[in-house]
Image (tube, rainbow, N blue to C red; front, side, top):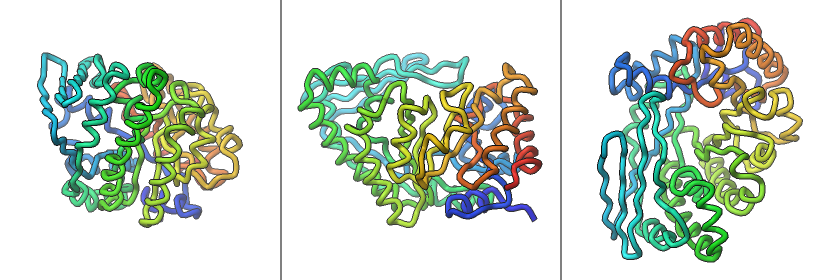
Length: 368
């Protein structure tokens, strides 16, 4: 009898050999688009029907990331409102006001920042005040519901906060402003990151104690923006601290690296994560699947990914899609150090027929 996606993934994570290469994917973006088009109900992603969809596709579930804590801001005034397609949030602190603006893009069913919270070093005192006056409380209700819904179709994952530096780069400032602040006032920049880390640590502890069995630090890295120097200076310590604590709690850890790989994959594999996920290979990324093992070296960190999200779009031919999946499985079935995954997400125009096809190919040519 074939093993379930959960059995296959746990076997690889425990250093064992399952019957087939595990196959997992993130359908969150595709589901968001279907909801936006009126093809699914608004609460689809939170419902048991979302897990049933994965069962129908024979696709392992793991990445409906959620934060198992609530964040409460004190001693500052926080206001949120909408202006057309924009979502605006403003913080008023004793050290000044900060405002961010995110714009919804209906064509792509996503949003992006058009105004970051921090514009320069002059904003660091206010940002530091926000983190010094932030507290977190456990919020495990969704996880307590979601865990039993998952069953044998996959793994129960929750998020820790990002490292404070990546919080700046990915969300609150952008890489250019972050580097400018670091150069303009290095002492204040370092002090602010330290205050932010205390706040993030409190939230991370709640995440580790949550019902989730798998914890992700959702860094959303690409070595085009953060290379080895910034990683070693500002990120390694936070990641090593929390991978060790996750392991001590008897749980699995991972992080998200879905951009270019050459500048960071080797470093991230030495942190202590059980796996690095959403690894995007050539020709979309910069490192072919067959080169992952040699590039990572002799570490125990597993590689999770292999099929670029773009390959599920109609712009990629059926012939090329089939070739790539077969070639990737030919490498991954050599030893149980891989999980076949979508890197990063199935896009809004992704073909569901190709998800079915991957499941067929795994059974056909994914056996060790």
